[in-house]
Image 1 (cartoon, rainbow, N blue to C red):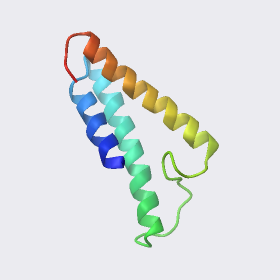
Image 2 (tube, rainbow, N blue to C red):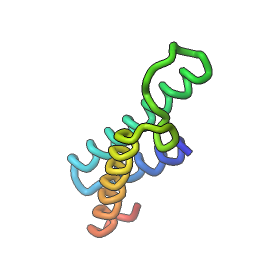
Image 3 (cartoon, one colour):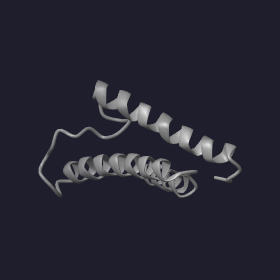
Image 4 (cartoon, rainbow, N blue to C red):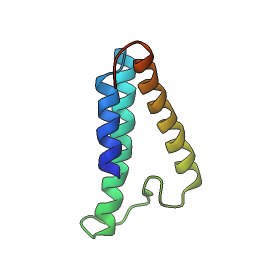
Length: 88
């Protein structure tokens, strides 16, 4: 699932209508993937345990709220590029 989010997010970043949209979309994807990587690596004992929750899965009220807001921004960037004639 995280690879699918990364693929779609990077596709949205590539087709964004301006540089700011590209940077924001890339940052959101990097943020989600970094959190997922750290949490999965800690769960499989590759690195020491941290307090980073698994995006969209672990219980962390504030984390879920901000991740959902970030996904909304990412979707809006994708919709904006589609509205300006670029195909996502």
